[in-house]
Image (cartoon, rainbow, N blue to C red; front, side, top):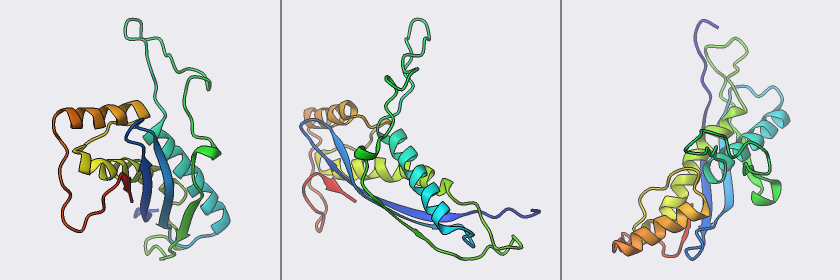
Length: 175
């Protein structure tokens, strides 16, 4: 097509964090994607679910680990590389907003990959939001239990605990 046509969307993630272990549980994940006219909504929902699982996996568990001295890949098999499994994720709520593209003759935009990209930010921002009252302002991906625990420990050690703005919820849970 002479003019590009881009999909739009939004995602919301709710997590629970165990402050004693750093374990993160994705409790709820909801997304709305506008891919223009949806030719086959069932396939689009399936692609979105797969994309969300891939994005959540990258945000929380997936990491390519290398031996510093030799550069040898240490996470070269599925026994070493932490991929998400169905029992690690909640049911996703996915919706489609069909606003036809004005630059495509059939009103189409790309769809399916919309689950992957927003998942990274939605998950990591939910974790940081949940830990804000403890003084945590940043988490590197993947946000493994060890990294989350270290961030909590470092914030506590540096006196990073602060009061939330009025109206904020307490507890280590976030949307």
